Amino acid sequence: MIDSALLLDIRETHRQQRDLMRTAKKVENQIGSICRRHTGEVFRGKEGSKKVRVPSPIADALQKECISYVRANRRFLKKEQERERKAMLWQIENPDKKAKALQPLKRPADLSLEALQLFPFLEPFIVGFLGFEESSEAQTRMLEERATQLPVYVFVQQVKGLGAHGLAQIIGECGDLSNYATPPKLWTRMCVGRRQNLDGSWSNQGFTADGSTERGKGDFIKKNLDAEGRFVHWYNAERRSLLFVICDSLIKGNGGEYKALYDAQKAAYIEKWQLAKPGRAHYAALRYLGKRLLKHLWIVWRAIERGESLERYTVERLFAGDTQRFEA
Image (cartoon, rainbow, N blue to C red; front, side, top):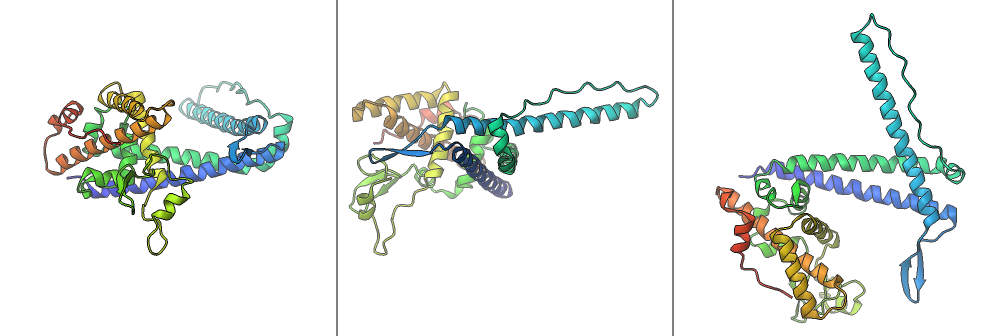
């Protein structure tokens, strides 16, 4: 059996880590906004009716310089304190010997004149950003440590590119996988499942029936409103994006069955849709790969719940016994 207290701990730690990441990103964006306001650069412009990101090299360089300066000073102070601590301990252990004079450490380079003008106002934002970033990294290490305690981690070790962090993120979003009666229910939780529209057609979560995204599809959304005016298809873009990041790491760090599956599905989608650019096929193949990974985790999790040995649940055997077919 899998410890329910450990699962709850992983879920709560995952939520805390995500909250820290979101807050760090907001503060970082605010720092960038202040730098652009100082340099007079804009963040967004228009190409016709489309809003586009406008490069702001001066503001970006200013932001990078200020953040790097605070980071370098933190490292300098940490090294200085550690060196003084070691010298003090040495003096305590050797009271009869004269301590050697410590050579001064090289200080970080000074800020440029423009950065120096803005730094007093930016410093509290940068200190906050680095604090959130460090706390997020600490929570990530805790997540990885707890994920290695799960029985399913024995299987995860066979999957190159997944690791303890990827497993912890999936469990953090889904919880106990035995709560899902079938793999499609788990797919729906991670927003890579299928759903039926009110007009009777079927489409993937986050996509319309013609394969394009729901963003900007006002007519599609209006057609799928219930009697009270609510959109009938629940969809969490951030959760599916998290799974896509895990799958992206999977195909970059895996030369085995999962990478071969991704390559085959991508080629099949390109041929089926006659695509000139592979971008749409890439994300469709990532979605397919994510479903397969979730299915394998669900199978192994259920085997653990039944008390079975995991020796027979290898990646090769799971792929050999898999009956999932090509889906549009």
